[in-house]
Length: 455
Ligand code: FCB
Image (tube, rainbow, N blue to C red):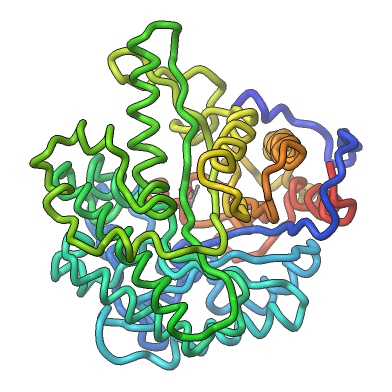
């Protein structure tokens, strides 16, 4: 059991910190299409790289797949009621490219778009503001067959898809996000290979980084051209990096790793350039250096309206550039629980790239949740984790960060990629056998936080 998960009785009064957020602060929760929707073969949806990846033996724990997931595609009306019941102001979800353009390029599948129209209408009916991500890793398989994000063409196909979505739904969604965590695609999809498409190919990885950035920029251009009056920005997972000790070597390691973890994704968008130290580290003949064409960085750095930040943990590096964990972990081996990291990250991003409106679009923890005989789920560890992170965000606001909103990952337990259903990240417990939804202790607590606008 992780250190924060000591069981406490459900009726135990939750401690309060006496912190109130600014008026109008927006509280929400986040999900993504492949992780919750299921209905993988319905209404004309095409295969994505994750469908393929799940079919490959040994890729996902216990052979789990997203074919049914939380069955949200069918249960979205009651899931919307649940969001209303929690008092969510905002709901961040993603649109599945393979539902909208099943082959990645070519005709639009109206039935796919219709699902998202119904979902968005249902949010408006309940006064919940939609925040839609265009790409949360479910690349149409037919585009992967044509080279995936290694191919420059895919960035343009992404812009076509984005344009189709903006034309159909643009005005109904006030906040658009382009690409979820490009870094995870680079690192997990192409460096460690634990995510689809499951490659271990450092040369390809940084080419992919550039094409994801280009796709982002082209989608922002398409958004401006569509005339939609809403906001758009990138969704980046950022990790504050720290030296593991006092040595000069560790300090240098933390700095270059900050380049790979953060500046490689922030600088092209907010400064129109790749970080010089990362480019030097990769070398002048790197595949990344060769793939950047004239004008690309102008496209990538087209102005954005907001920055979506996803924070899970800090990273500590020793002089050998090796990760040296310092804080307690969770069921996710890569996580370290360090709320101050969120404060450091938000104030740093504001200082170096702001002022820009910031939304936290993901933050959360997996806990060993179980349905007790009395029908409750006592995820005390999640309550503690979130309370401390909300307090860190509050401190960042007091330090001048333009933080507008906070979306907890995740609304529902869901398909956690290579971990399958083995990790539970939701505020709401899913009994997968019956697809019954049960509010965890954290969901009830979060409802009070929202109602009080504070912790
Ligand atoms: C993020 C992903 C999200 C979820 C959480 C735990 O990296 O964007 O889909 O898997 O981690």
